[in-house]
Amino acid sequence: MQKETGEKINRLKVRINGEDYYKKGAASTDYIKQVALYVDKKISSLSKNHPQLSMTKITILAALNITDELFKMKQEYEEFLAMLESEQKG
Picture 1: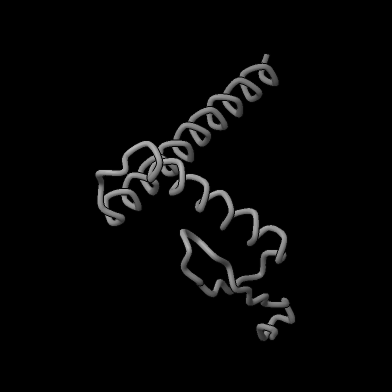
Picture 2: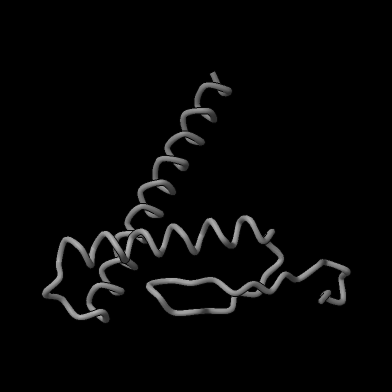
């Protein structure tokens, strides 16, 4: 499958927490598998550590934890860019 731009669109079945999902995107199939595996591991870890919680709550907690990681990395990246910019100025 290709977009009008000629960019190849990959479609892949991934398994997260025992459920199958289909993911489409321009990313490589290896990348899509890595992302799905990461999400699956986060959910599995939370399920083991908090067996009393519903799957909905575990999924929301996994999303919050992953988003927290993303925001921290973005902040670190912005600080790094600011440091580089200040070093270049002088």
